[in-house]
Length: 362
Ligand code: ATP
Image 1 (cartoon, rainbow, N blue to C red):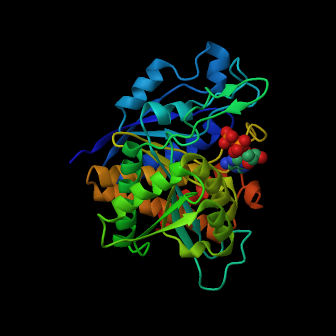
Image 2 (image 1 turned 180 degrees about the vertical axis):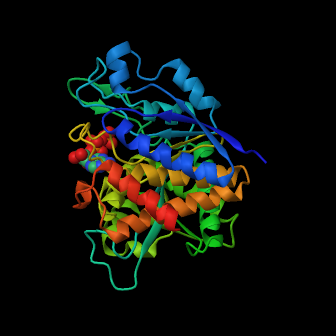
């Protein structure tokens, strides 16, 4: 069994390094007890790196990412540092495209005790996963849109190849969740098939994949209705799968339901590589103060352990991932050691320390 794993680490910009340090400490502690080794390779990249060197994603960092077993990324980009065309530095999007990370996995969890703008009926919990296609859709012409003085054009692309991989991934995830007792085994295709031919195509490919999984349920929803249902009845969903731009918007809505970006983890997964990173950006407004919430980054690291463990058939890593998630959720539910974004007063170090303490009790 593989026991040693190379992790490419992008510490990134803004609060990135502040939330990376305690996350790596927690991972090291878990690995030393779990009988596996995590070797972290630092990968310079991002807006500050671009400002210093003229390169946002150096070839050496790209190579380290390709060679690694998994990639852990905090946040990159700074509004004050831009390419000559005015767009922001976002190597995380370049990585998604270069490594063909088609499945953006965005779990949405709300459990008793968690701060949420929703009025949760007694006895209800939210536990669904939004899968955002992350390499095409309306981001296809990103940075290449045509703009004339009179009109602007971007092209939405849906391909059979990527959609088939995406839907297969979604049904497999629904099966894994069902087997783990976390969902009924249901996948919902979120689209706009009533208006756009491209989405009718997307839905037809979804239905074809659904037919291969008679043990799992499947249905469809229009994206506008889904935005409403996120607020009205989010406890009804299991696995949702959607196009890139729709997923971009819905995943921030999901983070809002969970109490904010500071607790929203994510993974971008392809056939050969995966990047794990919090949903939030580099939060330059609070960088350097030691008050950033590290929990979204820690939850992303938990997803990484589970993914590595499942991929390499390493049950201790899968168990550690689940333990780390549960410990972090415990800190959120307990509510005593939370950072300012969750109306608490804890520092980054104190919030991460609370997770370490909860792991010790688990
Ligand atoms: P991007 O476009 O790069 O995703 P963004 O414009 O959505 O970034 P963020 O950097 O995510 O912006 O920050 C949005 C707001 O949320 C800011 O006020 C920021 O301070 C806050 N925020 C984001 N992440 C955290 C965190 N981990 N802890 C505390 N506050 C955060």
